[in-house]
Length: 480
Image 1 (tube, one colour):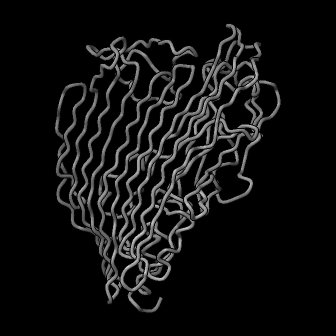
Image 2 (cartoon, one colour):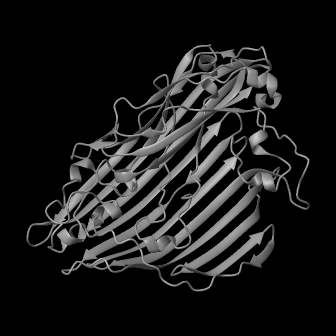
Image 3 (cartoon, helix red, strand yellow):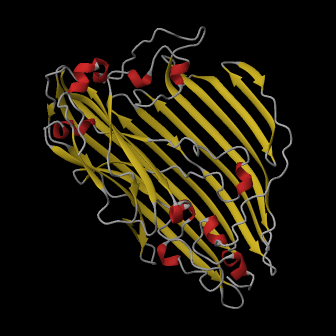
C-alpha cells in the first residue's frame, strides 16, 4: 500500500499544485495470471484532476514483438530455420482501476542499440531508446470513486492476440516473456478541506475490432517457402462522469481512438523478413489535454550462415515518430523553453498560466509538434571461429520541433530542426536550426571499425527476434 503523508502538504505548500505517486510493486510484468497489481490508498480526497502515466517496453522474447507471427503460424518453418515467436505483432498496454479498463497505450516499437543490425545504431541511436516515453491517461472521471477514502487497485497488463488459425482473433495474455512496465499517478489538488464527489462513472469501451489473415506457399519440394500475414485493429474508448469540487460541478471525460495495421512477410524459408506497420492514435481529455500520434515502421532484414559457419546479417529500416501534444500535459513537452505559456501548468479548464520569461520575437504557442524520421541500412559479419565480428552501415535522421501558434488555427512555427547522417560509425553531416538560425556542428573524425559482439553461442533467429532457432554452428552443420 502507498500513502503520501498529509504532513507533506503542510510542510511544502507547493505540493498542492501537483503530486505524483509511484505505483508500487508492478515494476516488471511477466507472463503471470493474474497480472500484478497495486492497492493504492489515495490520502487526498480534495483532488480536482488525476493522470496516470504508463511506461512499457518489451524485453527478451518480446523485444521485437512487432515482427511476431500469429500463434497458429509459429511452426511454419520448424523444419528449416526453426519455430517463430507468436502472439501476433499487436500489443496493448492496459490500465485497470478496480478491475475495470481505464485506458490503453498501443506502444511505440523501441529498438535498442544492438537491435536488428548493430550497424544501424553507430553512433545514432534508435528513436526514444535512451529516453523511454510515458503515455498519459487522464483518470479524472474516476475521482468520485478514488476520493471515497478507501483503497483502490491499479493494475497494468500487456495483451496480445490469440488466433484460431481460421482468420479469427481474440485478446489474450502474452505468449512469451517479458515486458518491463511502471506507472505514476499525478494528483492536482483542490482547496484543503474540500472533498471531491460526483456522479456514477459511464464507460464505453467495446473490445477492439480485428481483421487478420495469413497464407503459406510451398516450393517444389513441398517445404514451406513463404508466410504472409496481415493484422488490422481499431479501438474506441470513452469514459465520462461529473466531478464536484470547491468551484462547482463539471462534466469530465477521457476519449481514445486508435488504429493499427501490420503487414508481415517471411520468405526464403524464414531467412528474410519484411515488416510494414503503422499505429495511429488520438487521445483527448476534458482538461484540454490532447495527444495525436503515429508510429510508422518499415523494416527488412535477412541472414545467412554459410557452410563454414560465417554469419551475415543485412537490413534496411525506415521509421518515424509523430507526436503532437496540446494543453495540460503532466510532462514538459519542450515548448516551455520557447513559450510564455506552460502546458504542464495549465489549470483544470486548460486556460493559459503565464510565466515571467519569454524568448523575444517568438509568438505564443498552444501545442508542441514533434516529428522525427530515421532511415538506415547496415550489414553484420561474424566469422565462424569467433576471430572477428564487424558491422557497417549508414543512418540518417531528421528531427523537427514546431509550435502551434495561439489564435491562428493551423499556423505552426519551426523552433528547432536537426539533420544528421552517420556512415560506418562516423558522423559525416550535422546541421541544426534553432528559432530560424542555422548552424553546423563539427563532424567527427573517421573512426576505426571496432570488433562487434560475436554471438557465437546464441541463436541467430533470437538475435533478430524471430524465435529460438539454432546457433551458427548448428545451422552450418557443426556441433552446437
